[in-house]
Length: 112
Length: 240
Image (tube, rainbow over all chains, first blue to last red; front, side):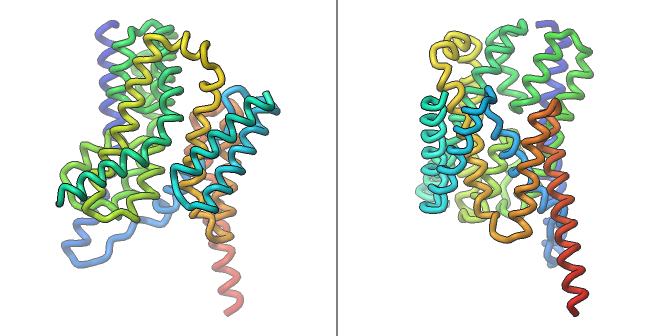
């Protein structure tokens, strides 16, 4: 691979890392300043609202099947239903995901 | 910190990270296949996964380089796709105990790790948080790297041999996001906001702006949240 392509990849890697670590350092400094002044630091409301919304957006975007068809959408609906049902019963992390994937897989194979 | 607490934090992180494998490995294999088809060697594709470690933007970067686009344009587009990461760390800071390890660990702060950490860190003891994060992000990072290498070496034959697994395993990601989000459906305000966000992301991603789906849908959700809260505030004001 040419050297300039490597330079581009390194810049992209450093830039991506900076996008992840920069806001951490800034927010930690903000919180530490409040701690030193014995005041309560709070995240701006818009920022704390965006956290769960980003997860909801990831959920929406990841629901689209790899090869969209009536069958794969039906399998997705079944997988979502079983995941939700298992979560409501057990309130755990691994089991609902496992049951969701198995039910999606079964529906995908049986309907496909 | 006791050895037991340290070990259990790490092991808990590894266990919590296991559902990610279903989503990460098939996508990483696809990335390995596409990178090799685009003219990168398996080692180069794997190094991209080691250092950039950001799914969608890696696909974009490799495609743009292969298409002969300007390298700086490719870098700018990669960073633009990843700019959504800026809201992740600030949302975790209130739950992070003091440690010099956090800045280094932020390399592992992907979308999915953020989603997991946002749900798990508030309920973990402070003494276990650093090790939990190490465990969960190591599982995810290694699976992404190994999946890319596997994709580069034998990806095409793997996906041809088990096409069903390639279509089924990625459902682990929406299932995981659903489980992480489920406790948030606790009020009409949040339920409406989250449903609007999910629907917006689905519609945008089905169109031709897949990479923009997450930030734009989150902005739609934020708008909904503010419209609903100001409506409630107005009603309460009128009632008084």
